[in-house]
Image (tube, rainbow, N blue to C red; front, side, top):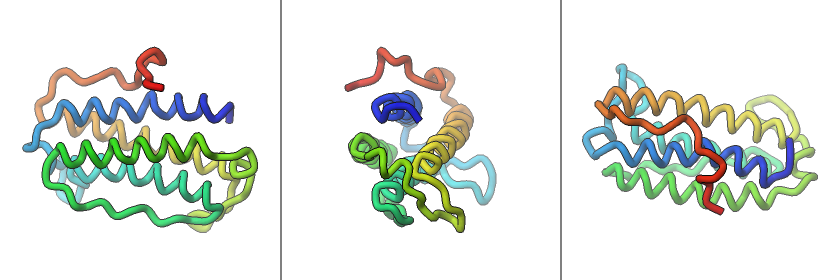
Length: 157
């Protein structure tokens, strides 16, 4: 991995698009799911935010850290607030990681790997679900969706 600022900026290029996608959805879209058994749109967005937080906290703590349960939302505005809260917290936590935390091995899901591996895995996980979110949003009728990632000049410092 490169410097943590570069990692954070690379991640934010994707996370801020999740914010944009959620801004394009109204309250009717919060419960949309493309098939029976799928996570509804609001739950998927919250899963994206809490999963990244879980991975980063796991690396910070040196051991698996359960994700926070965030299921008290009724509106898309509530979902946006949750995602924003986790974006702020995860940005802070990512920036606080030390080199030793990135190289220290951590057990997760019966696998042991350095913290940097788990961060890379977390970003891949988020991008995967962001792709699903794009599909959900389109299926709710939104025609104009954002580009899949932000330009570096659009990142807020």
